[in-house]
Image 1 (cartoon, rainbow, N blue to C red):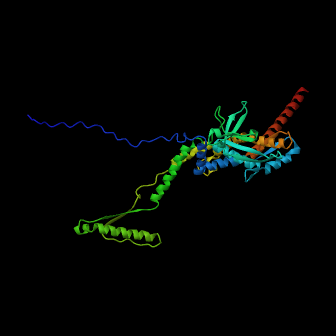
Image 2 (cartoon, rainbow, N blue to C red; image 1 turned 120 degrees about the vertical axis):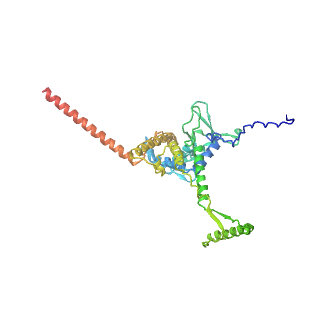
Image 3 (cartoon, helix red, strand yellow; image 1 turned 180 degrees about the vertical axis):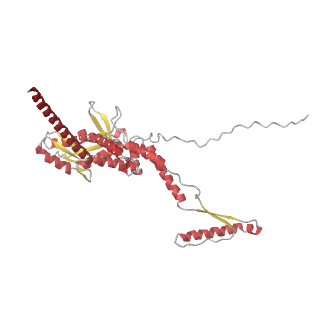
Length: 393
């Protein structure tokens, strides 16, 4: 019998290793609103060239236009105004104003402009665009009337604009009950952040693997004398290697010669660069699907067919026509205001040019087919009438 029995070891407890918590970035831009959101969209265009190129092409492909009024007497004055109206400090022509107006509408979801009237002569002397966040919109005395307030540092410092009829404001797809629109870039910041991270990692990998670094390993033998001077020999090898690499930067080639077991390897040579073509293409597809631009217009040589390219061009045409419909009210207001201040009550309409030469060809082909069909129908009707007369006689 043992007086001091051994204590039983406690049962091993299950240990849990917890890694660093990870946070989802699906709602990365959910905390940005107002001015912060608009600054984010501006930075996004500057950081991702594909987004900036797509918006620029949409603005240019929207095309030019003419303002046409009912009065021939004022048509020449209206044409001169459209060509020569000052826009901001450096712009000129109503087309310049429309391009800047549409660019702001696509980027921020809202476009803000102002008609400048000379207080002495009462003539419309210029136009200008402004950042949409500078103005706060409120409902006026009626449902259809609006009040514009200049934003200040606080709500108490806002100033009401005295002439709201001179303000031009357009919202892109505003939600129900909201006066402000939604940018076409909504939803792209999180995807763009992943894309930029991939590009940053590619650059870092090329910094590591493209700029070759060497690992020089000295292995002393079992000789006690050699082991005794291993540290000194290592420092000597490091010194000579550094001098040889430094001389290589000046175009001088030096050979490295040493005695003993010395192993020289390139750091990272065993690892290959990750293939980023598939994930980058998937992210770019999301960007292009949101912007509704065919890939071949952005220089992306993806596999496509002629029929698919034609369908993509037709879809783009419908998108451009939608943006034209958004611009027309503002352009008509500008033309109407110019004529009213010039003493005319003529109505103004906007006549857009065809988007491209392909539309001109298709319209001409359609007119030809319609004319041929009408000619055939007239011939058949004449033959039927002649046949009826013969049978009756």
